[in-house]
Image (cartoon, rainbow, N blue to C red; front, side):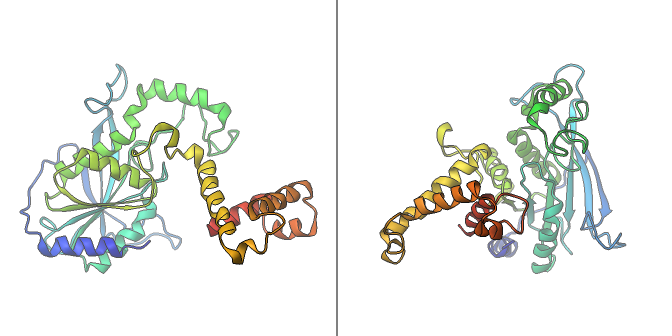
Length: 323
């Protein structure tokens, strides 16, 4: 992960900021407790507990988003981890590093937290959070319907046949599932930053789908946040419904980019000269079709030798990665 832009921004705020510290009530916060910087280790446990961990009790439904039904637990747990500044943590700049997925916990962000903290000589407080529905926060899963067990039709993934039962189970447990919306998750962040941090300048950095979460935080505009870094292209606004970047349309969206790229061949003599009889897009599609029709051909066998997937899939994935 490239953090140089974030480091530059943090350095500027750290040097220029003279914001006074503000104490906040610890009500609703179970922490902070010493914990390891890395949640998982291939080398066994570590005696070093240089981070601090806590669980924030947040409302299941924020006003204006949803209403908690009768008989439903009105709160959710939000897991937070931080590495505090070596000195002056009460006035140090805060940096949040947010994971995406969607549905991923913050464990993949821990190495980035340590790297940023080290490069800035421990002059900042670095935070991360498992946004609601993920990881060690209240997990959005289908326990009653057992839809993500290893023995279920698609293992840890949800099979289409399991969706109705899973949806019914979640609705009975939580009611209106807007309680697990991006707006609810962003409100968790805004509330936590306002109520449980030091009141100093705060920079929020999101990766992948986390950029959509951070963009939603921009809309909420918490006064303590003075900088945002979007290390990715996910978004929650900016396009009409028929052109929106849905995960379900990724293949088609990438296909449009690929088609536009292949069409450039016709404008370049170095490329078009090699495809005079049949243009490049048609040649490529013919090759893919040939792989599917003749999977045991020498060429198809060579391309597919490193994977159990059909050779045409491997070719598509390889070209997509190059693009």
